[in-house]
Image (cartoon, rainbow, N blue to C red; front, side, top):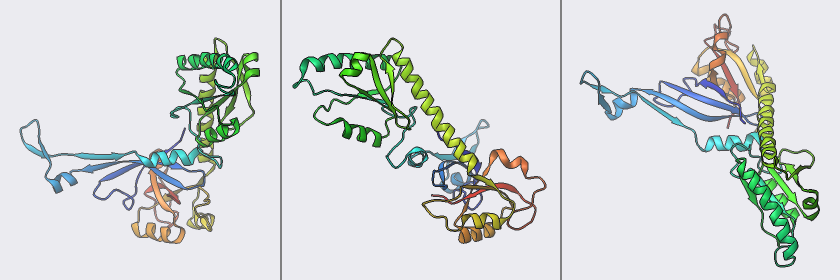
Length: 301
C-alpha cells in the first residue's frame, strides 16, 4: 500500500562505480522523500577491479557484467512512515504478521469457568472460520489484564482489525470490530460467511491505505518551471514538514545540483522513467538551457 516513483539516479546520486542506478522513491507523510530500494548496473567496472571473468561460448575469458540491488530496512522504514499515526504503528493487512486480534471479555477460566468455556467456544468457532478464509488471527488470552490496556497495546502495534467479544455479543451472535485506520465500531455476525466477511474487510482496508497514499503523492507533487518557485516553497522546511516533490525540467549539471542542495537542502531523487518523454523543447528550470531530463527534487531522509 505504498506507491513509489521508479527512476534513474543522477550522476551525482549514482552508486559509486556503477554505470546506472535505478531507484524507487516514496513520499512520506511529512513531505520528505525516501529512497526505498535501488538496483545498480555495474557494467564491467568491478569485474576489472577484482578480476572476475567467465568463459564465454567461444571458449574465451570475458569480464562479467554485474548488477547489485538492495531492498532492506529502508523499505520497512518507508512502510512505517507512510501509514502510521500518533497512536502508533499502522500495518497494511497484506503484510501484517497478525491481521486480526480477538479480545475475549472474560473473567477467565478460574473465576467463571462455565461462562468462560461458553465464550471461548464461540471465539474458537470464529477463529476457525477466519483461518479457513486465510486470515492470520491471534486471540488475547490475558484475562488478568483489563480490556482497555489490551486495546491500547494492539492499536500501538498496528494490528489492522481488533475484535471484542463478551457475553452480550455472544448472545447476539456477533463480534464487535474496530479498524486500526479509524471509524466507528461495527458488528460482524458469526455465521457461515464470517471468515469471508473478515477477509473482505481486510481487503478494503488495504485498498483504502493505498488510495490515501496515492492521493497524498498526487497532491504533494508540484510541477514548476522556475527555480525560485521551488526555493520559495522549501523555505523553512525541516523534518517536521516539507511541501513534497518537485517535478522540473533539468539540464544535468553536477555543480548546479550541488548549489541547489546547499541553498535548499533538496536533492535530485531521480529522473522518473515515465516522465522523460516530456523533455522535448523544455528549458532547465535552473539555468534556462535546453533540458536533458525531467527530474524530481525533494528534501529526503
